[in-house]
Amino acid sequence: MWVGIHQSAKAKHDGIRRDTTVGGGTEPDDDTLLEAMRRELKEEYGTVFASECLIEELPIPTETNKGTSGTVKTYTWFLIIHQGPSEPVLQAEECAAFRWWSLDSVEAGFSLEFFSDGKKRMLLRSLEAAKSIRPSLFKE
Image (cartoon, rainbow, N blue to C red; front, top):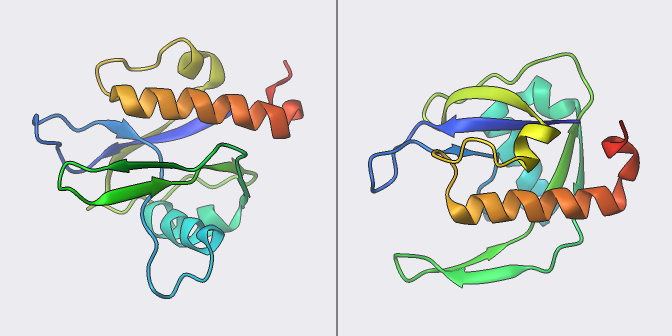
């Protein structure tokens, strides 16, 4: 199994562009969280790539926290399985680079200097949940 991760085109407050996964927020036209995830996937990685993906909500409790600006953020995680031959077409204002990471690389700690601690925890938690609903993806 491989995990698709891109480098953010925007630097954080510390000046570092971090590696991240596809994601974003809901918009008024999104009827469901799944619709919002599909839209974000298309926006960041392109329509063809997105059409080749299966998306399932992961059984992880919804997490809510207060952002640095004081806004409350609620997180829902999804398993995105890319089944096609295409590579993502990156949205330049969102994604600076893309690469596939082997599951071993992710579980071993990946680019420790690029992932925030919160993103590391989220990825590892998501992988554990994905193993529980799709164990066949993780067999050698």
